[in-house]
Image (tube, one colour):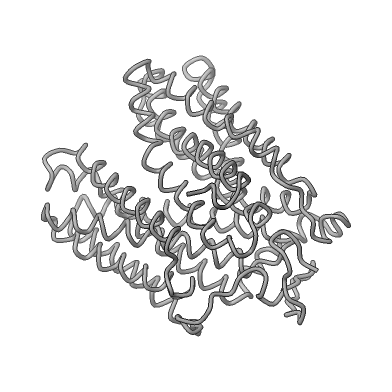
Length: 428
């Protein structure tokens, strides 16, 4: 399928899939390795929390740095190398050095994590033409779905076959495999890249946050997806109890999550070949509504209903992610594109963590209550989406070559330009 769009997209997709699978594998692998080395569940969970929370903090800074360099591929490859190396250092420290030092290294590794998610995706317009970007978005989203499906499974398989330490080594190796692809990413050609940075990092960070807040489609997509991600985090936290109470064992809950990932992957594969007639803005709204319905169905805790809910969840999660990518590509000012993508990934991760933390006590008290609360969170996301004026859902989708350019200066002033965007990688 990818050959039609050139070797550049095929290479990009393979690199993104390898890096993201290694990233998804790293959390479970470190958890297993820490348990094996220290025997402490508290240390293992703290290590995983440090890796995750730091990613939410590092996103804006990684994005701002990507936006300031004319060769973002070099910075991206450095971040990948640092992440892979840090995983190996953490592994070497487990049980051998004080826990606080090991946690500090895990936090440093987590700061680089957003480069694998938003950092990669922000470079996609430089790889494909504007016409190919909608389908390329679907392929890119598929790498997240595939990584979410394969990463934890590979961690378990590697740990079973060669030990928990081997799982960490394999995850670092997968991230490192993407280094040549990152180095081969094209340089930026927009004027802000060739002229060099004109302000401080602090000013760029402020401008990026203001862009997300002041550009209405970005604000709507970000708010909706962050709240929706909190609802998805609640489902993940409920998965072991779902397996225990309805499917015959706690491990069966992970099988249900695999069904969700498979459905998301299949839906995005279908959309890559046959794009939906709806605009990305409308897809975000409709997919969030389906997520609410699916979680309400799951609250029945009936095996057949749970299977149907898992399929619906995947069929909605996949298009929602693709649509959010499309909106960011369409609306983000070129000189802030990297930051907007990595910041978006960071705040979604924060929403996920909040949802997962809130679901634990609720699920312990009542699993249906926790799932109904997750459905209510999706309805809240839908209400937030409806709070902004929607474009014509069947109108032609705006792309990077026909949307008005937006320039946001260091003070955050937003100006709609009369000139159109004329290329995937540059803005006049």
